Image 1: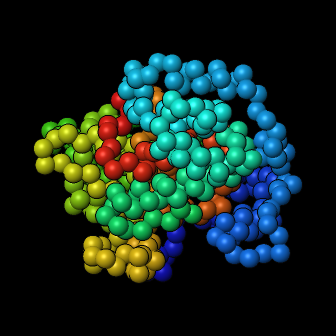
Image 2 (image 1 turned 180 degrees about the vertical axis):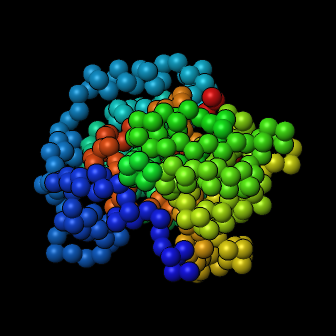
Length: 399
């Protein structure tokens, strides 16, 4: 029983090549500096008023002005085709306005932009180093945006708490998937990591597994039952795979891509139970969560379903959220790991930010697995807060 409660992905079980990666500008001193910055923002008294970071050469965070011409060019691509481009990319006019204001803050003085868009842009810029979108952010993304995403997930899941520290932003869906899979891959020959993926599938998975020299383990959706996922098929695929590899992860795409099916709650519960019993790292790809059209269908996130029923509902989530998360972690192997956040905008790879929950993936593991120990400028993440804060959500990306 104790073995069942062990986390599937830890610093000890992750890809040893990633574990050996050292990046000198990160470490305990920087983490402590981030904590001090948050404490100052909370009004906690210190013998100093600000933290000056000397670990990186972040020119814009220190006040260097960006090159205005490049921002103006970027701005023209963001605003010129409105509203047609915004509609095609799944962006609202207001989201594009906020992005434009963040890219070129001089526009905050313009009377052509609505006041609520200006307030949102100013709020985001205040959270950026040097109040500039071109400054670096930490590997997991800007804290303010992660907090907004956490509130979105909490509202989506009916009040079940979401911890911003368990949110990891990436520049596109593909980067998030590659980062997580890279952490899992290890072994040679019959000990190579195997990953169960649905067939039909989104080809990013097969391509990434081939690149990482992992083993693709196919499980087939039932076309005769509207592409349903059957746990007996998962067991068949797992049993056969164990003859030639070491299966460590199960990927579920819900709603399906390209099949479009929406898994019922009972199916999700069965999948979580299966992953728990077989000690599989469960990746829940939920990027199409707003694309539910069939009468009677309803999206349920893996994060919500994994929480014990008796801890859902009512007004006690704030009081019992930590207990709910702790118990859920014990009951499920690694539920709802990948990308349970708002939709990706802008094509298959995603030009906007991507939100992802860590599940039981160790936070330090994700920091090490990221291709960019320093996140690039936060322009693509700016689109997440309006999306996360919106009460009525439109369709996600088309694909």
